[in-house]
Amino acid sequence: MKIEICNKADIKTIVDGLNAYNLDKVSALSPIWTPLEFSIKNEKYDVIGGVLAGINYWNGL
Image (cartoon, rainbow, N blue to C red; front, side):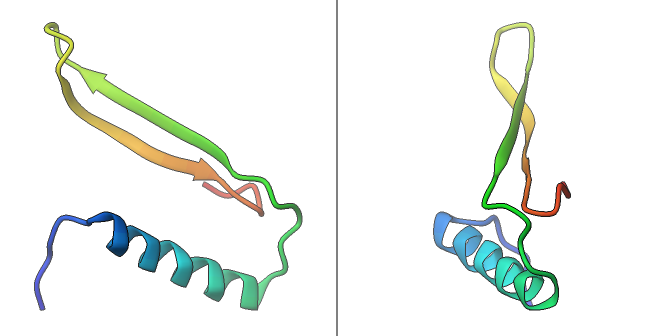
């Protein structure tokens, strides 16, 4: 087992898997995805961190 930084294909695989599992357990209430995307910048405005998330079908984060 190895922990690696996600690439776009990895992210798609994870999101697709989570969506398939969740939709199998609870039906979607609406097809809404509200992104929550924030960056943290230092005094030179370099991005030093952030959050990429969203509020989904079930109003969960």
